[in-house]
Image: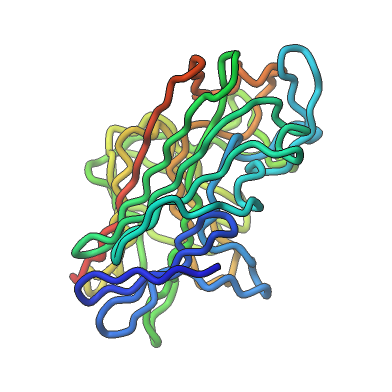
Length: 291
């Protein structure tokens, strides 16, 4: 089911399948979120839960028992239920089911709220442990923004611009999409700007950073300054992904990441563990930059 949100000159659409915000248009009709063309990628803005990234062999151990789970978890394939909505916001909920319990043996509630602001939107994730035992989980966003935004522009006209200069290595995924200790490459060396280049994504697949000082980043059209800003305070990792030739860039705040060499779920990097009855909320904000 599709739900339309409006505020000022902005119009957005959210879907119960996956609990995603799948469209954001300004007053001029410019669309900011990728439409999911299967020629490149059918995804648009999936919610990553209860894992981020992939597992080695698709398997993770929970209290010593092996469980199978697909890349980025199961929330993006779940049918969420709207539990609250108004003209400019909607809050969805996903709870355990026989299908989720076969992969992740916990009772939980995941709420995803999308709320329009004057110049964009905020997405908030709230996770509650409804089980009798501690609940380990990871969570993240995978928002795909159209890049380039307008006709006549090129992907290479854009850059990733952080709030402050950074010196940082990126974590490099292997052929299984997992991570290896020490397998890194220096992408930021005392700069706040990383120009986009399809060749880089063809070579390393995903740019993954951990522990940056910046808590905000802008996808910026360098000639005009126009673009999209993402504020992700509270998420210890940020990733960027596209496919060579694809007209989008995913900007992904993560609390968790693909597998290293851990076996137990609770050992995953940046895993959050809730106690029975406890809940936690994390949010990111997207703001249209008009240059």
